[in-house]
Length: 67
Length: 130
Image 1 (tube, each protein chain N blue to C red):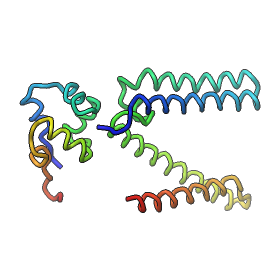
Image 2 (image 1 turned 90 degrees about the horizontal axis):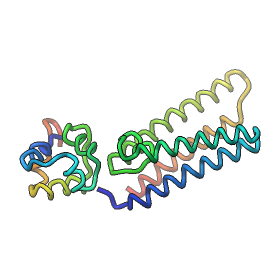
Image 3 (image 1 turned 135 degrees about the vertical axis):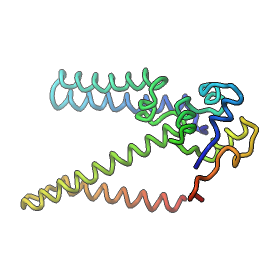
Image 4 (image 1 turned 180 degrees about the horizontal axis):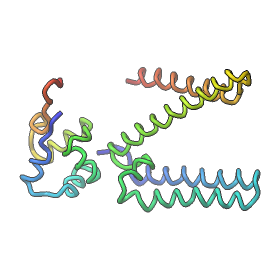
């Protein structure tokens, strides 16, 4: 699964810590999501998409070979 | 992203670890003497203190405590599964070694059966609950 969380965050010029506080997780979790080490739950993915004002499928896209 | 009150969850964690510290101190104090009780209780208290002081800054400590956000809880569950799996293998292997030596250990057998029973039961309940 590929995600565009970092691009969206940098576009809005906010820190990982600020995004983490906004969606109710730790900064390390945001970093793990951005680097692809952690796949968020559906509620968290929706919270991130809601924060960025984008559709969830624009934030997370399947990699080649993934459903 | 959590539906669990983090303050209540944290208090429950601390109560659990303080309970273990008290039980450790009491057990060692009764069986091995007051000094051993003090050492065991203090050791567990120190561990609880590390959890309390480190949880805000250190990700791994949040995972050890089982508190924090969904990722910390996922790490906690994964670590618990690894620890349980290793323990199950070691206890079962140790029991089989005792059987091979013609000295079957009843305690190890009980632990092996308990592990297998809890594991199978947890799988059944988890599958049922989805």
